[in-house]
Amino acid sequence: PAPPLASESMAEMMVRCYPDGAPRPLVRGWLHAVLACIGFWFGLSMLRSGDPRWELTLLLLLKSSSLTASVHLHLLEKRTPLQYAVANAIDFFLLPLNGGSILAVVTPRSQPWLRAFHALVLVSFSVAIVPPVFNWTLLMCKKEFEAAAGPHKSRTNISLSCGVWIYVAWLIQAGFSMAWFGYLIFLLLGYFFWNAQYIGVPPMPWHGVNWLSHDDFHVFGALADACALWYAIPAACAMAAAA
Image (cartoon, rainbow, N blue to C red; front, side):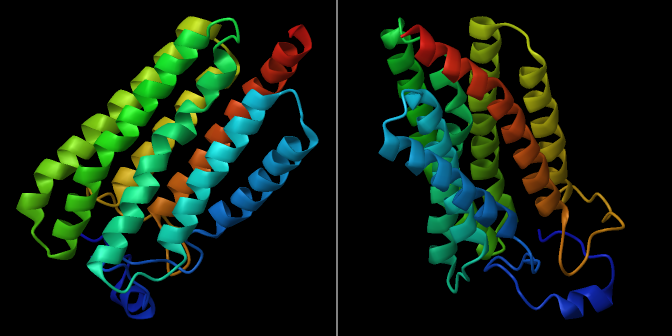
């Protein structure tokens, strides 16, 4: 069901909605738009200059592509359930590549087969999550909530499994670090706020026509990416210097 609003007056002001009826706050997606532009600027500049830290370039471009899919989902109006389902499926398809891009930096260049294996696993997660997300979105638009429970469970299980793969691989291969810990904590907080809109958590004082719990999730995701870059930049520099 659509996230609860703080008041009826807020509901009257919230004229923008997704095809499933959930409110679409005024600033939804703009944070990702700004971050995507910054990421593409740095990533493409590194690519054009032949920067030897190509693992970092790949990370920036994959994350920026994922953010762009989020911008497409949230900023551009979707007039039909099909448009909404396709946009949502693209967004979720890129999420495993977004989060898993850190493994390009974590895995040494001397282990190409492990890198290829990580890539295969991440792409498999991306492909596997598309059907349940697509079907779940269409069913939510039709208000068939009981039928949507199955695809929703599949989507959740795939997402969590992918997250566990990334976090465990990062920890085993590179060891514990504050960057790893910060990434984990910020994404867990973001996951809580993302789910808050569906499990009946009352709106926070700052939620309203401009901002809801999903937008809190975007902020925590950005903080998690900052932790990933905190690890990735020096690691990629060291990897390039040792080549």
